[in-house]
Image (cartoon, rainbow, N blue to C red; front, top):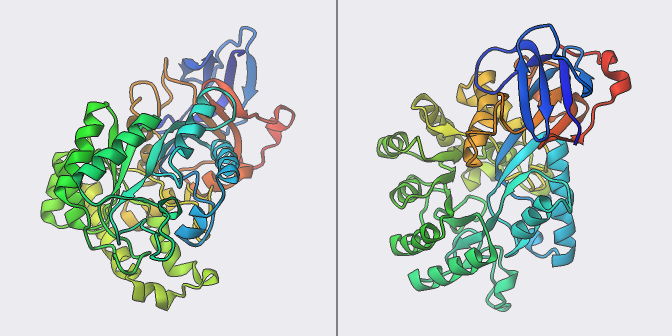
Amino acid sequence: MSDVVFTNVRILDGTGQNPYTGSVLVRGNRIRQVGRSTAPIAPGGAMVVDGAGATLMPGMCEAHTHFSWNDAATLSAIQRMPLEEHVLWCAKVARRYLEAGFTSCVGAACAKPRLDVVIRNAINAGQIPGPRYLAASQEITVPGGLGDETLPHLPFPEFSFGVNVNCADEMRKVVRMFLKYGVDSIKLNLSGDNFTPDSPADTTWMSDAEVAAAMEEVRVRGKRGTAHARSAASVKQALRHGIEVIYHASFTDEETLDMLEAAKDRVFVAPGIAILYAMLHEAEPYGITHEKAVAMGYQVEWDAALESLKAMHRRGVRVLPGGDYGFAFTPHCQNARDLEFFVRYLGFTPMEAIRCATLYGGQIMKRGDELGTIQDGYLADLLLVDGDPLANLAILRDPKRILAVMKDGEFAKAPEIASQRAWERAA
């Protein structure tokens, strides 16, 4: 691993402060020195990457990742992919995320019991390229809830998208199984979802006894609880039981918002609003017209989610991008679109949106003291971007504009050295 110096770059360090011209020395897997002047750091034998005015920023974090979602239009189509092909699919998607600039990802559920663990372990062992990854369990649900795909005439639990439990003892058994497999988090489906019409988004399905049993086991192992929680009651339930990562949180009331604000130093919200937008406006090729999406409840949820998330932002709750990419209508590697949605619909500034994907990303990865910003001594997870993301966030989802990706001091996507000074759109 050779030293690398990025010179002549516009440093967007992820902390929220204004960008500045400078240079960055990477030694090993760490940022050794950040220079804040036009005078470059002396290379001293290091590889020199002349950014020609391009933006250097921290690698992004996807806070609600489903590597095993296979760009299908239904839950059952995801689950029916054979295990061997599913492992290969996940490995391919992990590499694509890294090359797209997501150097960290938080697993939010996998389609088969050990998929996330296997992919995380392979990444950590250097067998496959991929982001830093926190592995999740399958979704744990109850009969009739989101994720229960069993059929009366085909009573095979392995065909179900989620794992069904019927009481606290069954919950404890399932959670212990996933913890034995080595997951970093246990995913509970507390609320319904408009994707499943018999369990809509504003309903709440799991008992307090079941949630308490799960979280007791999670705490014993020092792991993390996460929750699919769209309804206000399910968000409150998650907060009462110490769940740390709340997915969606579309419906809230004053009590819910007060509870979120009181817990803002320990809780993260990853709403995944792109799936709501896509269902309303981009799912017609898959049989869901705008009119059908409205009838399914998506317009009501979209309107509620925007108000809820605006209120969370005003109250200082950490809201992060990412979520439910991997369906046909939200295909993988358009994830950075969430940053544009944060600005367009939730009242974030572009700088705040980038901070959500970088600074907060380091925090949700449990490495906020060494990941997510460009600072001396921090891990060298970096993006070199052709242009100014603050002026146009859309460039973060254009592969041609991601000039280089570095994770842990090594290039996952190396810069084209010969053409560096020909980057036409460099800021």
